[in-house]
Image (tube, rainbow, N blue to C red; front, side, top):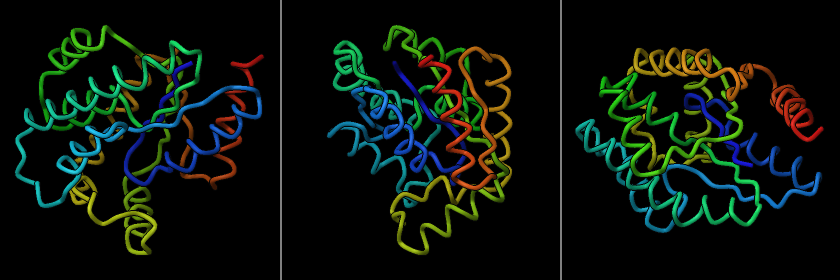
Length: 210
């Protein structure tokens, strides 16, 4: 099974990925937790470029191709081998993030992005995608609080420093994508307390396991 989590900055993906891992391992699943960008050794180097706030002048097309480079390596080196071994892969961001951030928000051709995905990754899609939805104001407030208290690094804040309007586009894009693919997406209200978000996710996973 291939599970992904999506959402704006500060939506709580990292916390909930760990909860999902514990829940599924207790059900007998052999799980692999990973993330994009940065799920491989090569990917970590690409991540350092993409999220560095000093690289604010990066061209959208260059940004797009770096994400695809990270993803090709990630899928070939980690995701596909894990899935072929019968493991459950739980990933913090995947293809949807590229479609929304670089397509919907940056304005690059979304058909081109989809076509590139089909060409290089043979259309690999998650079985379930949890969209942790909340307002950008709340999400950014949480993200900066974590950065300020040291629980998140300040070296990866390029997107946190984008204008609020950018994050509003991201949220709208995710919700539209979820509307178009209701069979795959599960939208969870991430403005709730962490334990309530966890319970909502586990209810979905329990049905999948039934």
